[in-house]
Image (spheres, rainbow, N blue to C red):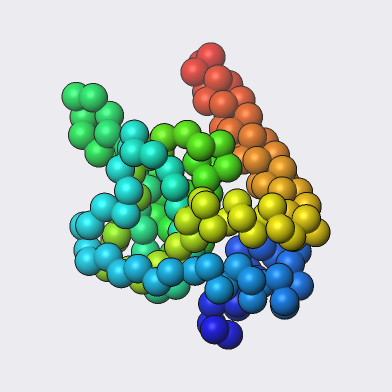
Length: 154
Protein backbone atom coordinates (compact mmCIF):
# COMPACT_ATOMS: atom_id res chain seq x y z
CA UNK A 1 0.00 0.00 0.00
CA UNK A 2 2.82 2.53 0.70
CA UNK A 3 4.10 2.07 -2.88
CA UNK A 4 0.62 2.82 -4.25
CA UNK A 5 0.13 5.93 -2.14
CA UNK A 6 3.63 7.17 -3.09
CA UNK A 7 2.80 6.75 -6.79
CA UNK A 8 -0.55 8.49 -6.34
CA UNK A 9 1.01 11.34 -4.36
CA UNK A 10 3.30 12.17 -7.28
CA UNK A 11 0.53 12.11 -9.92
CA UNK A 12 -0.69 15.63 -10.80
CA UNK A 13 -4.32 14.61 -10.33
CA UNK A 14 -3.77 13.49 -6.73
CA UNK A 15 -0.87 15.63 -5.48
CA UNK A 16 -3.10 17.89 -3.33
CA UNK A 17 -4.65 14.97 -1.41
CA UNK A 18 -3.71 14.22 2.19
CA UNK A 19 -2.67 10.75 3.36
CA UNK A 20 -6.18 9.51 4.32
CA UNK A 21 -7.55 10.70 0.94
CA UNK A 22 -4.67 8.99 -0.89
CA UNK A 23 -5.47 5.81 1.03
CA UNK A 24 -9.08 6.02 -0.21
CA UNK A 25 -7.88 6.23 -3.82
CA UNK A 26 -5.33 3.45 -3.23
CA UNK A 27 -8.11 1.18 -1.96
CA UNK A 28 -9.83 1.53 -5.36
CA UNK A 29 -6.72 0.62 -7.36
CA UNK A 30 -6.63 -2.66 -9.24
CA UNK A 31 -3.27 -4.00 -10.42
CA UNK A 32 -3.06 -5.05 -14.06
CA UNK A 33 -0.10 -6.45 -16.02
CA UNK A 34 0.43 -6.20 -19.76
CA UNK A 35 3.05 -7.94 -21.87
CA UNK A 36 5.04 -6.02 -24.45
CA UNK A 37 2.84 -4.99 -27.37
CA UNK A 38 -0.45 -5.64 -25.57
CA UNK A 39 -3.10 -2.95 -25.84
CA UNK A 40 -4.19 -1.37 -22.57
CA UNK A 41 -6.94 0.29 -24.60
CA UNK A 42 -7.62 1.18 -28.22
CA UNK A 43 -8.66 4.41 -29.86
CA UNK A 44 -12.46 4.57 -30.10
CA UNK A 45 -13.17 2.31 -27.13
CA UNK A 46 -15.29 3.64 -24.27
CA UNK A 47 -13.14 5.17 -21.54
CA UNK A 48 -14.03 3.60 -18.22
CA UNK A 49 -10.70 3.45 -16.31
CA UNK A 50 -7.77 5.70 -15.53
CA UNK A 51 -4.29 4.22 -15.24
CA UNK A 52 -1.10 4.89 -13.30
CA UNK A 53 2.16 3.23 -14.33
CA UNK A 54 3.66 1.28 -11.41
CA UNK A 55 6.45 -0.30 -13.50
CA UNK A 56 7.48 -0.26 -17.15
CA UNK A 57 6.41 2.01 -19.98
CA UNK A 58 3.29 2.68 -22.05
CA UNK A 59 3.31 4.01 -25.61
CA UNK A 60 0.52 6.42 -26.49
CA UNK A 61 -0.21 6.39 -30.22
CA UNK A 62 -2.86 6.73 -32.85
CA UNK A 63 -3.42 5.30 -36.31
CA UNK A 64 -2.78 7.67 -39.19
CA UNK A 65 -4.62 6.60 -42.36
CA UNK A 66 -2.12 5.60 -45.02
CA UNK A 67 0.84 5.83 -42.64
CA UNK A 68 0.18 3.38 -39.80
CA UNK A 69 0.83 3.96 -36.12
CA UNK A 70 2.16 7.33 -34.97
CA UNK A 71 3.72 7.30 -31.49
CA UNK A 72 2.77 10.43 -29.57
CA UNK A 73 4.48 9.75 -26.24
CA UNK A 74 6.27 7.14 -24.17
CA UNK A 75 5.05 7.28 -20.57
CA UNK A 76 7.18 5.99 -17.71
CA UNK A 77 6.70 4.92 -14.09
CA UNK A 78 4.47 7.34 -12.19
CA UNK A 79 2.64 8.67 -15.25
CA UNK A 80 -1.14 8.87 -15.14
CA UNK A 81 -3.09 8.36 -18.36
CA UNK A 82 -6.59 7.70 -19.61
CA UNK A 83 -8.08 10.08 -17.07
CA UNK A 84 -9.84 12.48 -19.43
CA UNK A 85 -12.31 9.96 -20.81
CA UNK A 86 -13.20 9.02 -17.23
CA UNK A 87 -14.27 12.61 -16.62
CA UNK A 88 -15.94 13.41 -19.93
CA UNK A 89 -17.30 9.89 -20.62
CA UNK A 90 -15.95 9.99 -24.16
CA UNK A 91 -14.25 7.39 -26.29
CA UNK A 92 -10.51 6.89 -26.10
CA UNK A 93 -8.74 9.32 -28.41
CA UNK A 94 -5.55 7.23 -28.68
CA UNK A 95 -4.16 3.75 -28.22
CA UNK A 96 -2.21 2.86 -25.08
CA UNK A 97 0.20 -0.03 -25.68
CA UNK A 98 2.55 -1.76 -23.24
CA UNK A 99 6.05 -0.81 -24.29
CA UNK A 100 8.25 -3.67 -23.12
CA UNK A 101 5.73 -4.91 -20.56
CA UNK A 102 4.25 -2.98 -17.68
CA UNK A 103 2.42 -3.13 -14.38
CA UNK A 104 -0.42 -0.63 -14.04
CA UNK A 105 -2.77 0.48 -11.32
CA UNK A 106 -6.25 1.30 -12.55
CA UNK A 107 -9.36 2.88 -11.09
CA UNK A 108 -12.76 2.35 -12.68
CA UNK A 109 -15.04 5.28 -13.45
CA UNK A 110 -17.92 3.96 -11.29
CA UNK A 111 -15.67 3.47 -8.24
CA UNK A 112 -14.06 6.88 -8.74
CA UNK A 113 -17.43 8.63 -9.17
CA UNK A 114 -18.83 7.04 -6.00
CA UNK A 115 -15.78 8.17 -4.04
CA UNK A 116 -16.10 11.73 -5.38
CA UNK A 117 -19.84 11.76 -4.62
CA UNK A 118 -19.32 10.74 -1.01
CA UNK A 119 -16.22 12.81 -0.28
CA UNK A 120 -16.81 16.39 -1.39
CA UNK A 121 -13.49 17.72 -0.08
CA UNK A 122 -11.58 15.09 -2.05
CA UNK A 123 -13.75 15.81 -5.11
CA UNK A 124 -13.01 19.52 -4.83
CA UNK A 125 -9.24 18.89 -4.73
CA UNK A 126 -9.31 16.42 -7.63
CA UNK A 127 -11.49 18.60 -9.84
CA UNK A 128 -9.25 21.64 -9.30
CA UNK A 129 -6.29 19.45 -10.22
CA UNK A 130 -8.15 18.50 -13.43
CA UNK A 131 -8.67 22.19 -14.22
CA UNK A 132 -4.94 22.87 -13.73
CA UNK A 133 -4.03 19.82 -15.84
CA UNK A 134 -6.33 20.87 -18.69
CA UNK A 135 -5.03 24.44 -18.55
CA UNK A 136 -1.45 23.20 -18.79
CA UNK A 137 -2.28 20.95 -21.73
CA UNK A 138 -4.15 23.74 -23.50
CA UNK A 139 -1.20 26.12 -23.07
CA UNK A 140 1.18 23.46 -24.44
CA UNK A 141 -1.12 22.88 -27.42
CA UNK A 142 -1.35 26.63 -28.06
CA UNK A 143 2.44 26.98 -27.88
CA UNK A 144 2.90 24.05 -30.27
CA UNK A 145 0.33 25.44 -32.68
CA UNK A 146 1.89 28.89 -32.54
CA UNK A 147 5.34 27.41 -33.28
CA UNK A 148 3.95 25.29 -36.11
CA UNK A 149 2.17 28.26 -37.68
CA UNK A 150 5.26 30.46 -37.35
CA UNK A 151 7.43 27.81 -39.05
CA UNK A 152 4.94 27.24 -41.87
CA UNK A 153 4.94 30.93 -42.77
CA UNK A 154 8.53 30.69 -44.01
